[in-house]
Image (cartoon, rainbow, N blue to C red):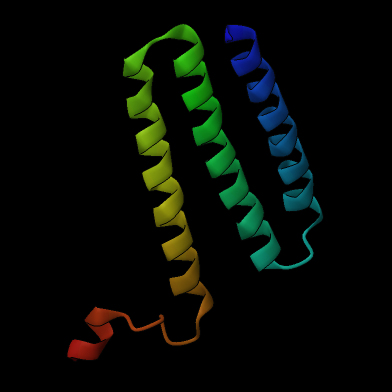
Length: 94
């Protein structure tokens, strides 16, 4: 079963390599952001597979932090991509 986890992690690494190529080629900022999200999601999957293969629960914290960072990156991208800050609460109070 451990070999299956490692094989699945290698497949996910191939998707990360394809995402890096998409980030390099573009053509739009949205394409690059979607590729970065794929890297974040694949990274979480890789970390979870390695945690299962090594039977180590402490690695799960790293996967959780990476998932949070990927979500924050998506929110930051949306806020900076819109012309008015996408409903920025600080701007509305003034």
